[in-house]
Image (tube, rainbow, N blue to C red; front, side, top):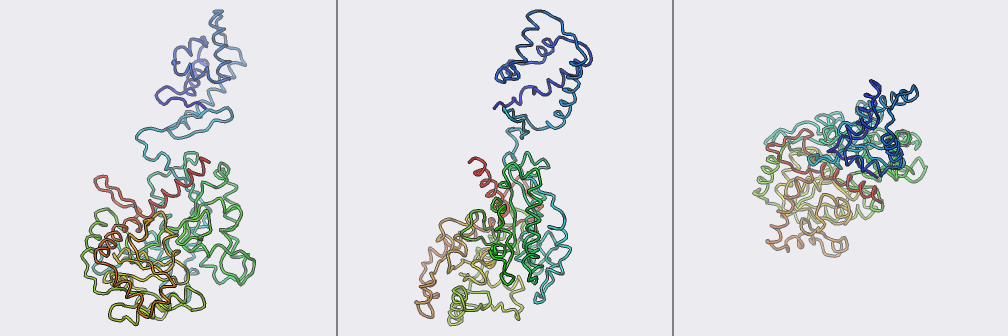
Length: 515
């Protein structure tokens, strides 16, 4: 494998000049190469079998001092070389040619100031039925019991409508299922996009799988639910970008939990689609708000919160504000009752019971469908801002959007299941879980008495309490999705949830590529 040095005139450009000059007048082949060649290229040519033969031919001509006279066939050859060289010259901007014994491939120049090297991403231009038409069909995504039309949440790059009151203009009524739209909008403005997939380290597939699934919730026929996923995979396999790594450099973002895409039967009564279980889907990398703990190609990233800052200074102002917030409630819980037919439901029932029995130290915000307060971002944030601890029991699934709302408010999360965060958001939260959170095992919760939660939280020393809150507040930049066109005054850069997720994807794909 030989790299043509960037500092020298590339060989294909020499061929171009050679062909051009030969077509104009019959110069000696040796004199032309001698005029434009370098010691480095001569060394490179000796290392190539094809170039060896060319070099021998050149030397023979020089040795016998025969003038070179263009024949019609030779002229035709050089005209062909000229055409090929013109094409190469056009395609070679900002690239070098990688020569191997089998193929020739274009890659990006490793220039010292190329901050995108290893970070280029190519976005597939999917048929509109996989994204745009889904947004246009927002009425079908809205369910009868939804208090607000889903069409409202598609505004402002998926952030939803602006929140008023005393919050800054960067606060929005963001729906928890909008991650697909938000991520796509941010990808469109990613600083290292490329329209040349051969330069890309990763390929982004902007299919709105979660929103598509939501509008098909009421379809009992599994074939109808599965159709779009199968069509997508078949479309991807026909694209030239698939061939290199068979899709292992492709990634897709879903705004719902992975269970919604892991139906392993053909029963119409079973929940979800089979998108993630399709054979070719095993090669994709999935980013989702909750991963299957047994999956090798799923990675959980934060739920969207209400805060979408435009700069580092705006984040710092918010962090400074909640550092000094007066927290009058020891712990709180915002959520609704769940059926007690499984362990998650039993844990939530116990958490609500203990919160109610500790009414002087715990505040319960009932998010039952009939209530309205949990649909108000300001009500939720005020509750979390005034609480020292925020209880995060499992609900319909292991994870909750409330985890990230509470972190945003500087409220220390209290978990009752390892799968609620510790085994999920490995790219975004500390590996040492005790640095920012409290964990109460289910067994201890059940057998500890009716006020066990309060006893445990009251028993935490103040020194540790201060450290926990500082670490929670320090996490905020990593769990928010900033404005797609965020400002970076003075060259300031902060990594938000999007940046960290994309970095994780690129590193994973690079590890696969090196195997």
